[in-house]
Length: 238
Image (tube, rainbow, N blue to C red):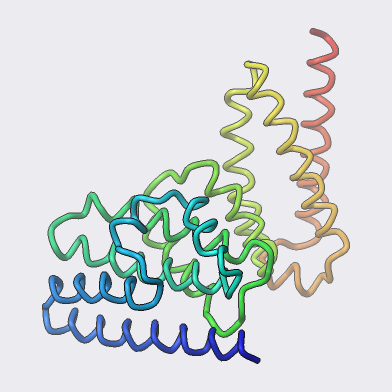
């Protein structure tokens, strides 16, 4: 009960801050809005915004995990604030600041939802969709894509998961000649095979809703198995 009450208060404070931010944006007050983002970081987490920006995603998780209280929700709130900060950067004539902030926010949101421990009181799908939309014109790092496609799978967006997984496979395939690249490609092919095998056990209506019909799943699984066989054969010839 205490945990849920804490999460409710945290999300309420975040929601109220975002509402004020929206009002400031409408009134063309980006400087004041940016100051409010910094104040909200300090109020909710006792952390200076410069520290939050400087810490890596892993270090930030470790810091927030120290009290063991609603770490996933804290990450989502920080990601939400960071998204607002990135959006404001463009309004302040600093668009170059937007990409790293949007990317870090996306990574934090994906890390927060990876184990399905985050409360459904926070609309993580809307946050992640908003961030991916803002980052759509960039080529995302492989580390981010590696977290993104399982998120799409968990949320039933199977075609989106396949698209991201295919992009990762193409990147690894292009560098499969070096030993390290080849190992990574083989591992990713195995993950792709398991993905399609899981989809074979998925209800057909869910597959249709996820825009990846059963016949396409079977075809893709055959392609992946063929790619695995070709890779094994190539290694045997070496």
